[in-house]
Image (cartoon, rainbow, N blue to C red; front, top):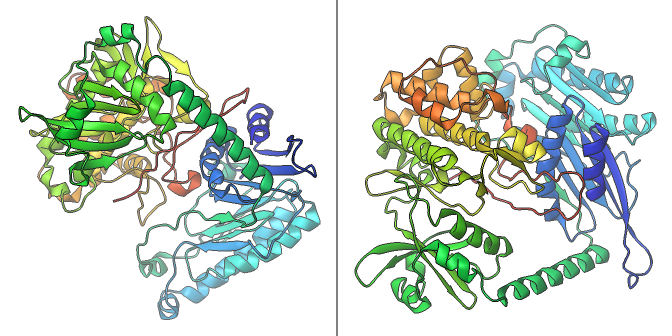
Length: 609
């Protein structure tokens, strides 16, 4: 994949291929791995990089199999042990994905025959357009939109073969309002909603005809969640890949053991500088009843978290590093050194740590109300968060971030601000937690660049996802997402609406532009909220998630805006506001930068509850 990364980053094209040889002299005969990445041609190069970044987190799930394919509504990535670049179709893996469907009686009642005819005409004309337009075409016909594209490696004849099959597959989705054909050499999609770059309308690429009235037909479509983009995995075992993974695993284990056998995880100078109590392992075992499952509060990439009770009756939360976690080892040290001296009412308090043998733990103050997401996104609990509490939480998070960015001794970028990392104490005061991914800046440093983009999809800013550049404005973007989630009671990732395919940011932006921002408010609030506070919060949220870094406010400005001080400039278009399936959902963005060497990956899965 390194070859793909380099080509895609340096060429400026939305397409790349690569071939790499096995260099192990013990493996005979010599074998190769072939790879391809192609973005849909309506995407900008920036959007292509983002789509590729997400696909990089999914395609490794195919390993150690000899072949893997990953489709997103924006790009396609594939690897195999043979040269497949001129492969038009593959009966074993070619497939279709239909958004939803109606029973036969329903679609006839709601004009299904006319709609089916419109789709049939569309895909026929769309395929012909693509063949005469270098393998790409978009079209609108009677209210139905379509996109077809052949991969750049195919000849015109190979493209024709692929699209002929794609037409048949797409029509097999009827009477669904949406259908995708995903073949070895091409992609074809139709939808009742426009899903491609609107600029193509002005460029004359789009063909339009009479508009088909779908309003009555759409009434018969029941709301369903989108099917996740399909991951195709071929099942043959690939010896070379297996051997490579074995070597990587051996090197990782050797490095980990060497690291643990050092003079100490934290140096003596660091221990003295931390000014934190060092708890004994026996004390933690006793406090948690030997880490009883009944005391387990949750688990993440770092490890498990347990509730504990000290001998004096004090309640604590014990974060125990998993012995198999390589990333958690680094995050443990980072969190200790980062949060040890932070003192703010809206930051979780680190009480101490425990290091004994291979056991490593962080001891925090106990938060009886767990995390914000356990209330906000739970239908049974969301009503417990009334508007005054939500507004109080928004302001508390803002004050905590301001402290990290401006008022603490070192400027700290959290890099993983999300609802599950906001803990709530007994009085529902918010506490920012989990500093394992945080970065500290010294002096006048304001931004940095990294090869390893970490965080949770839906909260990561565009410039960080695509270019690895992070700053205080990256946290501001995450805060804006959080604000809109708190107001609406909905997650940004996985958000769906019957009228469009935008995520939560796009939905909020759409309502704002239509002068209907109050329609965003969570129905669980029952109409009991302060209009001015809600409007201020929505405005602040949209201001924080603007596409361009320079347009986003600082956290000090956010505090003033929430307090009703000063004018609120109108927000501009948010970043990552388009439909979730265009870039995929429930994944972490990983963007390797040039030059490419060994790319590290941290994956956070954010699932609906």
